[in-house]
Length: 223
Ligand SMILES: CC(C)(COP(=O)(O)OP(=O)(O)OC[C@H]1O[C@@H](n2cnc3c(N)ncnc32)[C@H](O)[C@@H]1OP(=O)(O)O)[C@@H](O)C(=O)NCCC(=O)NCCS
Image 1 (cartoon, rainbow, N blue to C red):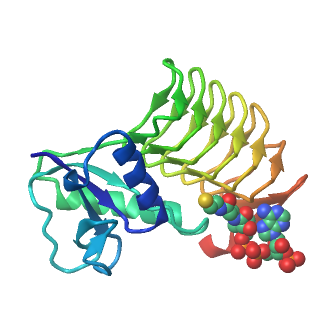
Image 2 (image 1 turned 90 degrees about the vertical axis):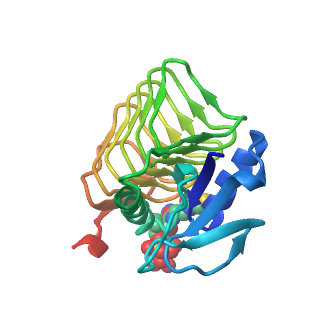
């Protein structure tokens, strides 16, 4: 029996678990792995098989579908999700497995839009015409991703954010809840957009944009 491995035992993992259940996947088909040490033996009534950073870890061969469902903080979460994904690829390189994406039944993805692997799309999110969402991305509840937008790998878009037409987001961008990004704006890699920010101009890589109009700071944690 092919089963689904959810990597992460936090709040985002719970959201992904509930979306899978909404799609009719029974608990028996799902198992969790903690990102760090095996903190729980059970999460949401499913077995936790270990921690990704433990010295010896064994992923049973029946787990052929994997999603890394770790949200984390605006500063660390995207890096940790990318790291966890790379680690899973090393651990499972000999096995036949694939990263799956989990899309809420209540979301709407236009037929011309594309969503990568290892990505989750939450309730009432809209991914409109010709938009592209990369691998390892989290698009949370109620997010609007307008036509022709590009969201690069390992980015996180928090609830209610609005990404207007043809915006380009770099790798590991974090957009806070309710932020609005004006059409055609380009946002660099490793940028954090604070909740509620109204972004009208391009933002350079490795910065934080807060407020309306946003003040732009260099990210000290990456220096
Ligand atoms: C931008 C952000 C990452 C900064 O976090 P932080 O480094 O912990 O910053 P702090 O909370 O210590 O705030 C520092 C200052 O910035 C202000 N500030 C923080 N976020 C702000 C925002 N989005 N807009 C305006 N001001 C903000 C704080 O009020 C504080 O001001 P002060 O120094 O005058 O007291 C964070 O506030 C944010 O927007 N996070 C996104 C949250 C979110 O969307 N979560 C979704 C979960 S599902």
